[in-house]
Amino acid sequence: MSTSFLDQLGLRHPIFQAPLAGGGDTPELVSAVAEAGALGFIGAGYLSPQQIVEAAKAVRARTSRAFGINLFAPVAEAPLPKDTKRAVDRVSPYFAEVGLPAPQVAPQVKDVFPEQVAAALESGAAVFSFTFGIPSRDIVDAIRSRGMAFMATATTIDEAIAIQQAGAVAVIAQGSEAGGHRGTFKSNFDAGMVGTIALVPQMVDAVDIPVVASGGIMDGRGIVAALALGASAVQLGTAFLTCDESGVPEVYKQAILSAREDQTRITRAFSGRPARGIVNRFMTEVDAGSEADAILPFPIQNAMTRPLRSAAAQQGRAEFLSLWAGQGVRMAQRQSASALLERLSSETRSAIERLVDSAGASRDHPFDAEH
Image (cartoon, rainbow, N blue to C red; front, side, top):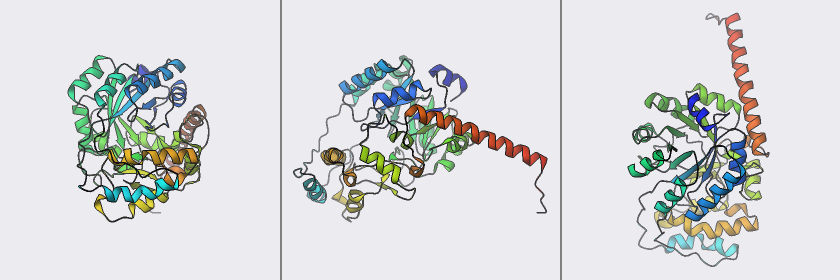
């Protein structure tokens, strides 16, 4: 962010660990990131209010430094198809493979968002961010009254402007390379698939608040590129998933470490909402169906497939896991969070030094237009 904002949070590095809802951002990871001088996030979208309280206490027990908390903004629930049998039949064989009965469709998912917000407001977090949209004015006012910094994710310029108008202190620019769920909320998802290198400078020009670049950034070169485009900080997700402190299953980490840049794809198969992950059997076969009602809307599809994913994690079967990851997967490494941040810092300095040296060489040997 601006230097004053970073100073207020006590950050040494302009780096955010992305919210990794679903178990990736353990208290150990979030606190380790904070202790190393960056901003760790609790991805609380799937947590109950009590789990939010417990996660925040666990982080605070490990660090006195600033950390963030993230929730999913409420989304309009799409109507269920009249017949959900096709969706159930599509995934039932995979449930049988892991020893589970056929899944059940629960059309009414209890809304605990108000309780989640209340718990997050009392979490002690310094930053409160949202994905999938913008919270109501009363929530924003409550965040600000507690001295918390309000941020939200945008995939288009119109979304970024709306976030600024809502009173955010910063906007996270989610490029199409990013892993996990797409944050689009003001247009269709195809329109929100703008690459990071195109999205960030346009967003910087359009808003007056700091922009945090996200999507495909995995090393110091990516950080310097984002800063050169006008970003004030960066947010990394995939890079943190393979850290020692990450809570994702070992088979998930191995899938990231062995994946190539061309092996991720956007899918609705797991959750009903477009998300980027490593291509596996479940994604390939469920997406292959042509029936429009074979995949239920978010969050119904997500709730229906959760038992399958939980069983697959226990059994080490990556073919049934939602392996959320960005297009920079080939650069992932296994190391501790502190080692990752030290490496990112060193790589960033090296990249800047190379640019400075290159600029000096250009002055000594100016480009000859004739050649």
